[in-house]
Length: 243
Ligand SMILES: Nc1ncnc2c1ncn2[C@@H]1O[C@H](COP(=O)(O)OP(=O)(O)OP(=O)(O)O)[C@@H](O)[C@H]1O
Image (tube, helix red, strand yellow):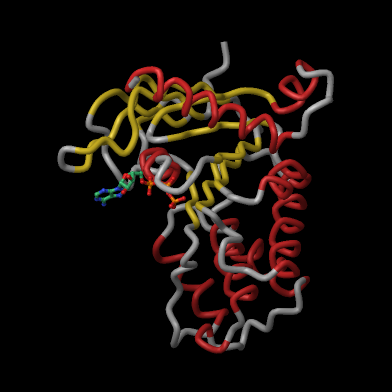
């Protein structure tokens, strides 16, 4: 049996007295593009941080390609696209070689050249969309087995969103990494993703193949409607508990 890229078992994270995520069990096979959705505070960033080893679970376990989270070939991009303002784009790419064991600078150089982003630009002078593209190119230069993106398009205008999603689609057609991205924009997820994970109030509401989900409702309901129904079901379950 092949090892799933992502395997979590009853994973939970508590912040003080409050659980950010609880009892989350997932098996996600290699090559999937996973859309992670849920309202504010649902636990999306918590789950993503657990997957990349930035947070340690309070309970349960997380394995990436059979090894504990934090090891292996994983790239993580958050919505702040943290970069060194005073560096030129070229310097950022070259600095990556000193920080990463696996580093393929040509991947970043080629992608940015294709996008018309000059390597000589200072990072501090880039637009929001260009910064996002540079941050993504740096993540891709690791040629990761797992690419994790926390709301990568949240701060971008519609054109920059489209460009970034286009880059992700190209990446998927070029090599077979597994991608997990969270977003509030369901239409964008639908174009890119083949697997859906829905969280609400720190609880897993749904995990499964998107086509199978749409087929199981005879393609009569949109993905957005189905996601809302998972969230409403949670609302119903909570009101039954508290009634
Ligand atoms: N460092 C922290 N300290 C205390 N509580 C936290 C911390 N980080 C997250 N939480 C809480 O855990 C819960 C889940 O937060 P998380 O950031 O994972 O949600 P999210 O789905 O990513 O939300 P958003 O869409 O608003 O970014 C929330 O109730 C949040 O307040």
